Image 1: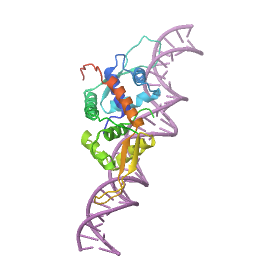
Image 2 (image 1 turned 180 degrees about the vertical axis):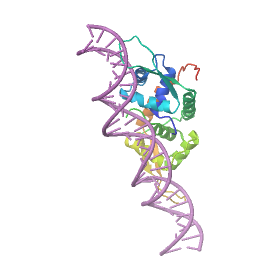
Image 3 (image 1 turned 30 degrees about the horizontal axis):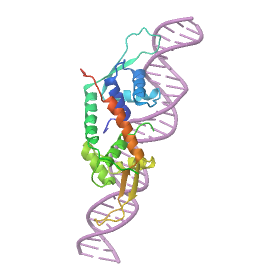
Image 4 (image 1 turned 90 degrees about the vertical axis):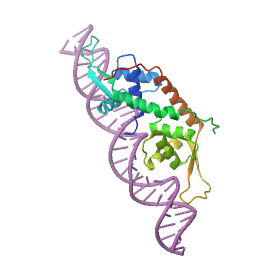
Length: 106
Length: 106
DNA sequence: ATCATAATTTCTATAATATAGAATAATTAA
DNA sequence: TTAATTATTCTATATTATAGAAATTATGAT
């Protein structure tokens, strides 16, 4: 693949940035909150899986929880490779977003 | 649609930024040069079409050229709506890329 | 005139990704 | 043991990405 897709990038950035526990439900919540755009419930797991397969994330299942119930959470964290991808894309956009000309638009 | 896709964003930014004449071949050339990643010849026209359909770009055919030959070039320019989209996405990323914590990665 | 060359866009086919929400799983409380 | 809760996985479909061949249109050479 050439670039990270948009959801992939948002997921990686979120896992890097968020303070809450980084598992599916929370990651989705964070992205919705930060971007103001809706994501369906399932929509978060596809980029998560893909990013893990590519080696940009690693994960493990939560061992124990005293909360109400529910399936085990799967916690994610960024890998070195994942960070590298983010840095690469940041570099590209720094150049693109720099010195944009004033426009007179229709 | 929720966000601009990556190619859409790159195309819009390029049309905003590039100094050369903004038609397909040049736009592709510029993106390849700026990102260091290959795009096939046809790959540029799909986001161009889509962005125009969405109202983020407008275009017109070149009237006359004294160059060697070839089909008429189609020139593109950013619309107000297109600019708005870019500003929106920029705002999102400014927040995401700000205050990222130091990491100790595996 | 005809043919080769050149520059550009359009077409076509396929792979990959996005999106939504229902189904399933695992845990706890009543 | 049934209902409620929390989370992930599955399934189906729409959209987007990607590559490169084909078509279009003009020029230059013979």
